[in-house]
Structures are given as C-alpha cells and as structure tokens.
Image (cartoon, rainbow, N blue to C red):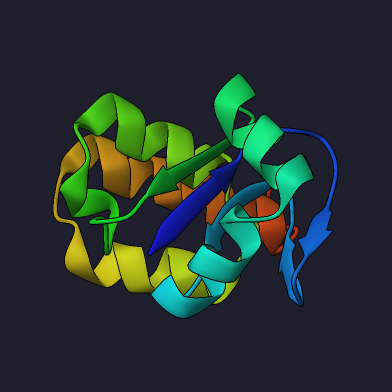
Length: 108
C-alpha cells in the first residue's frame, strides 16, 4: 500500500521507517506502525496519510498522482509508475522527477 509522509522527518515505529514523501509499506507493517501512539497522532493531524487500496498512481486523480510523484524519491517506484500510468500529465511529472533524482536537471 502507498503511505504518504507529508512531513519533513523520517518516522520510525515498530520496526518500520517512513521517509518524507511516498512510501510503499506492506499491510502487516502498516498495522504495526499505525498502532503506535505517536504515529496515531501524526495520522490524525494528516502528516501521515494511508492510501490503503492504492497500488499505483492510476488509483488517484491526476492532481493527487502528480503530488505523489513530486514527493517520491524512489527511482524504482517512479519507474514502476511510469510503466503502469499512461496519463500524459502524470508521465510528464514522472519524467521531471526522474531527471531531478538522476541529476539530469542541471542547466548546461
């Protein structure tokens, strides 16, 4: 499942780590992580958002998908989404983010 850590900090609980941005977490690990008292408060505040049924960007509207892409630092996850989501706007966002992560966005 996709978990969006909208905060600026890495969050650790119950052996699970979420980096800022988009994270993939198993359902079992999410149950352990989300039951921690501090994490519960972060979920309630909206800093950590669970998209339990989402498997890829296709499960979101375009604006939400682009937000997830812009907040993702995993090249492999972006490449997976690039293969599964054929919407032009999402594809463009993925290309920009991959270029940024791979250091190809520097002006010559």
